[in-house]
Each structure stands twice: as C-alpha cells, then as structure tokens.
Image (cartoon, rainbow, N blue to C red; front, top):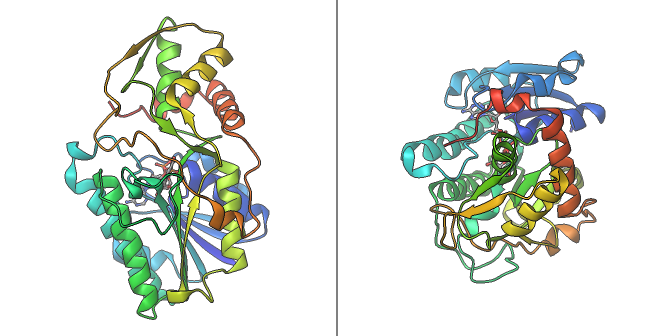
Length: 328
Ligand SMILES: NC(=O)c1ccc[n+]([C@@H]2O[C@H](COP(=O)([O-])OP(=O)(O)OC[C@H]3O[C@@H](n4cnc5c(N)ncnc54)[C@H](O)[C@@H]3O)[C@@H](O)[C@H]2O)c1
C-alpha cells in the first residue's frame, strides 16, 4: 500500500488511521464532508506533505471519482455512525451507508482501485442467538436501520469482488470503539451528563446490557495488520470478513461504576428501564474474534484501560462537546 484513500478521514477512527498511515510512510488522501468529523483531529496530518484533505460528500460521485486517482487502497469509514436515531430519519442510513458505499465502489471502479477495507459493525448480528458470535453465524434478523444499511454495504463489496471488480475486499465488523478522539457513544453521553450535574446520571435501559469495546489504536492495528497481510487475495470470493473486538464484555453498569470511580463521583443512577436503551440496542454484544486472532493480531488494551484513556482524552478535550453535541 503506497497511497491510501480514506473516507471519513476527519472522524474518530478515520483520523487515528490517517495518523498511523502517515507515520508508516504511506501517502494519504483524506475525504470527508466534516458532518461529524473535526478538521482539528487532522492538525498534525495537515502538516505532512504526504497528506491531502479533500472536503467532499460520498453522495457526490463525480467529485469522489475526481479525488481518487493515484490511490491503490481505499479505507471506507465514512458513514452515519449513530444507530440510536435511525427512525427519526429512515432514509439517512440507506443514503449514507449503502448508497455512499456503492458510490465509493463506483469511484474505485472508474479509477482502477481494486482493494478496499470497509468498516461494518457487530450490530449486523442483530440479537444474535450464538454468543460469542462468529462471522459465519446464521444470517441474522436486523434490528436497526443502521445495521441493515451496513449489511447492504457488505453485500455490495462481495458482489463487486465476485464480479471481478475488486481483488481484495475486507469487511470488519467492529464492536464499540473507545479512545482518543472518541465523539459519540454512551461514555461520551455519560461524561457530558456528569460534568453538567455530578449528582445524577440517566442511563438508557436497565444498565444490564452487556457490551464489548475495543481501543481505537487496537482497531487501527487490526485494519493495517490484516490488509498488509493481504489475506483476501487468496480467499474464496476475494472477500474476508473479520469480527473486531476484545475477548471481554462488560455490563453498562460496570462501565458506569468505572467512570464514576475515575471521576470520584457517586451520582444517583436513574434508569429509563427495559433491557434495551433504544430500538436496535442489542442487550448482549460479544463477538467471537478467533479468526482475526489467528492472523497474529491481538489487542493491547483491556476494556477498562480503553475506558481510562477515553476519559482522560475527554477531560483534556472538552471542546468536542461544543463541536459535536451528542444526538438528543
Ligand atoms: N465508533 C464505533 O464504535 C464504531 C463501531 C462500529 C462501526 N463503526 C464504523 O466505523 C466508521 C467510523 O466511525 P467513527 O466512530 O469514526 O464515526 P465518525 O462519525 O467520527 O466518523 C465518520 C466520518 O465520516 C464523515 N462523513 C460522514 N458522512 C459522510 C459523507 N456522506 N461524505 C463524506 N464524509 C462523510 C464524517 O464527517 C466523519 O468524519 C463508521 O463507518 C462506523 O459505522 C464505528
């Protein structure tokens, strides 16, 4: 990989990936419409002569096609990454996660770029009947528009690969990601609440939802480790699907306990009730990661360590709450 094209380059995961690619000597074109991303996350990258940021929208196929020449690999991370509000705007996931993925693939086809990594999600397993959930779990019932639109994106990648338009397609199904530049998710919401009113904390659901998390640098390591090993090249259908997570899970209540202890607070906990916080909230997400572990990648941080890094970063970067208020 010499020249990577990164969609969602100014986002939480994208900007961490950009920094790592640049440190590894790769030339990077970042593509972002800055809808949720922050140019500030690219402050260091923008000083690097091997980096170029193009402001553009995935729904603008001609502009996307024009921005891509020279790239030999695409990391497609841009998306509507918020699952909770799907039913407030049912078209958004379809456009931002499915049509946008089609456009990225078409821009690649026009430019002869044949290798792609796509950020999918563990939410595609819906409420899995098999836990820990392996990549080849029975095709699941979808519980959110977000996950449905990501499944559609995944299937487009494999159809392009099967149709000879791609040489290598990598699909990564992430658990929730934590770490520096984290700007959405329950830790973001909890921290904001506790700064505003340290005496009480509102928790969606009953707090017993069990979730798995992965530190962002471990996520970036995995993307680079697998794509550099080129595991899709000889794979059936030139497509590889990997779950990405840790071998642990915690209850939402455990992470609340950790956050409160780290901040030295004892707020009154107010639960909205029920075992799901919102439509599509999966009460138990825990992915089987044997397949990616077998490639030689392994996470360096535990969930608790990742949570700790996230809190430190939020504490030092409260500006993100002005720049990116959480969804209501
Ligand atoms: N963060 C997680 O816990 C998590 C978990 C599972 C999957 N993912 C996936 O990982 C990817 C990155 O997530 P993130 O947490 O960094 O989110 P993010 O919102 O921080 O980043 C997304 C980036 O894409 C950009 N973008 C959005 N729509 C665009 C468009 N139409 N055209 C161009 N740019 C656009 C945004 O401005 C932002 O910079 C997403 O595909 C998300 O679905 C994230």
